Length: 122
Length: 108
Image (cartoon, rainbow over all chains, first blue to last red; front, side):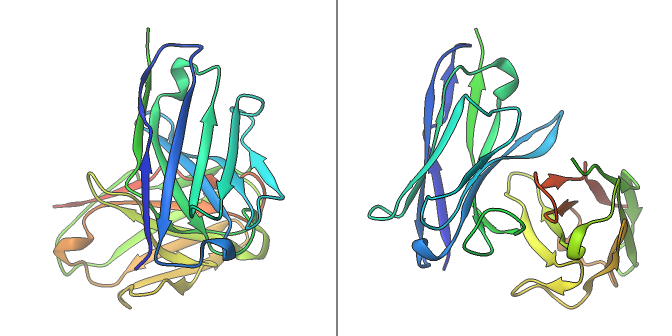
């Protein structure tokens, strides 16, 4: 059974940093691209960042480019999102998703974790 | 980026009725790379349909998807109690992937 378990969310001040983690199990992690998708009541669902199967290709939404860094560790079957220079508008529930192929582009998210909540507030 | 507009915003129906949800794209979705997700309160989205018309693993055949180009439809042939939820479309034919704003299917 595919499982994705996020952690690392919390409350942070504007300008601060946070690192999200996603522990994957139930599938061969190295065969799949992975992404982070966030959800807010106001803006809905937004793809944030993606990484291909071996970490050699990464992509970011314009809204987070230059501030967030996605990475993965095959030894730990884990996905990460380093979030820097956080803004109030980054407040959201962040989901880790498995992408339906080796890349992160032109693929759907076929499995989702339960999400971790990030709140940016002074 | 491709903007997806879902309609209606809310659909009020009774169990056993047919639900028809629409997703319209601001430009043609390449290769019909269009997915539908179901989300219930407090849960993550679940993939129902991908490539516009292919049911994901374990999805009942009362769910069907159709369409191409800019117009796509999700049909639930006979609503069951567990189908009342919010449904989102997503395109992955161009970067970045984008989502519609959702259609809520509620019990009438």
